[in-house]
Length: 224
Image (cartoon, rainbow, N blue to C red; front, side, top):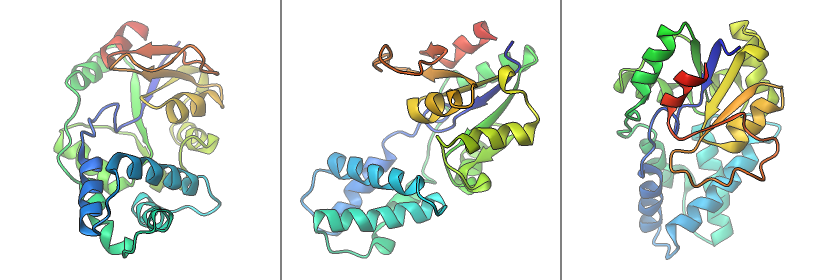
């Protein structure tokens, strides 16, 4: 029986919009680099992800700076990453809105006696900013910065269980990223739901497979 739900935040509860790619375009324009923004950003995210899996923990803001410097080197761009990264840092506090079905879903879960929490790869201050600006209230909030570990490392999910005293067999992790929100939770035998709002993810070859595939968070009400 599912008694507790742990939500990813960005892309699951809160729409990230196009703020990140717009920040990349601004950075490239400022350093006068004739580079495709989407390609540059894809490479930037890969480098950042590799650093997240390293032996040293860096918060997200530091990771953005270090990985931008590495990506500059890859593309032969001359620029001060600590200075040029600012549009991306500022985008972490841009206007981002909650998805339309979220508040009704949380209300429905509360009415059914389901406890819920947030488990997010992010810095704590930016997460709290978006929860407050969207008038979302969570009693249990767990961030990578707070726990000093990133998804999909098993300790991310184990730490949440330890702090909540929830049983793994009674929990469901819900998010829009396969690696972070399905592969990671399943590595400690936690059930997982993959949110695929656009219905275009390739689900069939995934191993381990998600326990549920959702196109709307409202579907959670019928699962629990």
